[in-house]
Length: 73
Image (tube, rainbow, N blue to C red; front, side, top):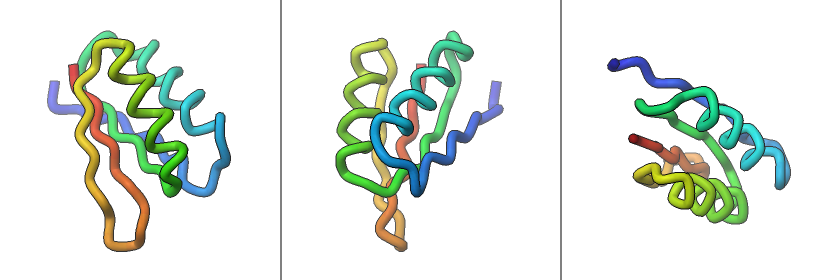
């Protein structure tokens, strides 16, 4: 269960990052998903979506200004 699914949504405009995250959440009943995004709007949308779906959300700021959002259930 140490597999981490990665969704790279950097460079995509909303609502694409949230849609990709939703697809990953629907496929994975539980586990860990990391979503890579580069806008604060996408960060808010993906975080809200995951929390509303019962996932724990951890946000890591990256040196290049992007975000790594880790979703766990």
